[in-house]
Amino acid sequence: MLCEKIFGKLSDVDCTGKKVEYVDIEWHEAFKKIHCKITDQGREIGIRMDDSILSRGLFQDDVIYLDDQLILAVNTPPCEIIEITLAPGHEKMAAKICYEIGNRHAPLFWGENGSFLTIYNEPMFAMLSKIHGAAAVKKTAKLDFDRRISASIHNHHH
Image (cartoon, helix red, strand yellow):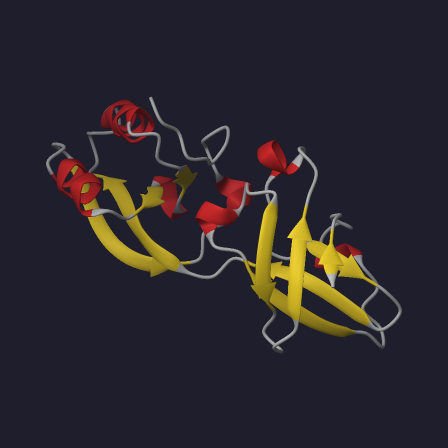
């Protein structure tokens, strides 16, 4: 089965009488055009999107296949993240946090209660832990791409 189009979000599609299967797309795969995947029900699928996916991405509950009996939707599984919070009186350090994360070309998301989220890696965690007035905590969570601050999530090399 080949998926070549996004039909909208699962909440926008009539699921009545249809089987819904999910395919995991990791955060770092969201902007890739071609995938070979297996759904949560064991169905082998191919995903081949046009160039618009390079800027739009594939995210939670995107419907990538739709017929009279079956819907295939994207699941973005939880991953290791760093949540960064600022102590009262240190709000101006938000600029440093955003700069340092952006300078490493890492994705950046709004968290809850004014916190920031980024993907976990040990050097990033160590650097963020040293910022005065900021607290960095390693967690496992599902990223909400509707809350991303970064313009795009992609691999970048100099």
